[in-house]
Image (cartoon, rainbow, N blue to C red; front, side, top):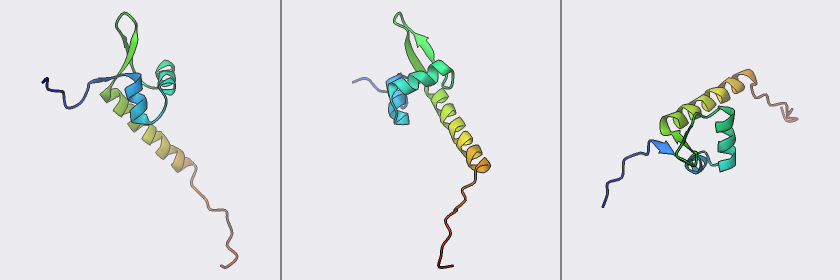
Length: 83
């Protein structure tokens, strides 16, 4: 039996899609736009995303979400008649 590494260094686009709970096509679009850093390997040019790059992307998305929330605070516009 071969020991498996604790974590894979490189992930397929399908692996990334599973982590992000999205489609492989969406992940491919992220890569092609340059939003998610990836490398092309092998004769067939298969894309791979380094686990650290995926984590960096996730952290950037959290930061963007925080910035959006800060710039667009939630305001409850519903007026309660019982107040």
